[in-house]
Amino acid sequence: AQSVSQHNHHVILSEAASLELGCNYSYGGTVNLFWYVQYPGQHLQLLLKYFSGDPLVKGIKGFEAEFIKSKFSFNLRKPSVQWSDTAEYFCAVLNNAGNMLTFGGGTRLMVKP
Amino acid sequence: DAGVIQSPRHEVTEMGQEVTLRCKPISGHNSLFWYRQTMMRGLELLIYFNNNVPIDDSGMPEDRFSAKMPNASFSTLKIQPSEPRDSAVYFCASSRTGTYSYNEQFFGPGTRLTVL
Image (cartoon, rainbow over all chains, first blue to last red; front, side):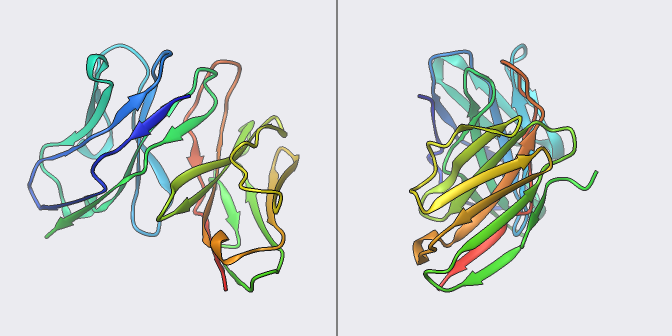
């Protein structure tokens, strides 16, 4: 069965700092990976996804993630965070049948103005 | 499209009472998911429907929980009797999926349940 680990539970940054959130997965099949964001009091929204091709994936709001197969990782990055990026971020992996997601535990990001 | 609609948005009830959460998926979506989010356990998949049929309910905590999808536009998650440890935010999500294919899951606003 697949699993997803997000080792950083809480991250605090100042505005303009660079961001990297870790995501490691354990899965034996074809890997399809996602990052979702949940702003305070809101529902989850898709930031970006990787299915195949270029391992560097660009998402919305300046976010990107890099799939590194040898490291079983799909870390989320942003060169310069803003206060509005304060949210919880979830990494997820899709199962073989392509119909269910397994989510990581989430990382709470707080950006200080 | 209005997106995934959930009701109620907030529910406060007393232990032992029956609680029913409702979800209307996005029109045209054929898969529906119920998730539970808590501080301790994060986001957990409870049950997954495809074409109104429950496909995987292995995440349902116990017999007190039940879910139905009588038609393509409506699903309920029922807890009877409710307990304080059921307090959480319950999300419904929907997507358009086919065999070995995937489309983005769209999440509803959630129902924040508090059991006293």
